[in-house]
Amino acid sequence: MGFPKRLAALRKAKNLNQQELAEKIAISVVQIRRYETGKSQPTLDVIRKLAVALGVSSDVLIFDAQERNPSDELRLQFEKLSQFNAEELRVAKAVLEGLILKHEAKKWGSF
Image (tube, rainbow, N blue to C red; front, side, top):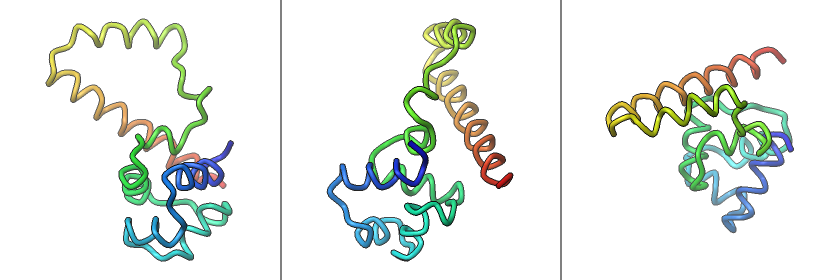
């Protein structure tokens, strides 16, 4: 499922109509319709606002479930994160989130 369908499904799961979601993130309902039909791609800031409004992480909005599972190589690295203290873990999460969003922004820019 692509971003447009995922956005619509998450919105409906929260029992929000397009107007209500638009109001929650302070954009026009027309823009929500464009996102849900695939005619437009949101900015990183809008992705963040959508994720907060829908109560999900941005990766849930962006990636299909099968795309979110790490490879065996990455799984070993992620297991090492359990040894990090709280501050190191917070920094690691922030770095990963930034890299993921940057990667997705590049993909969207290549259309």
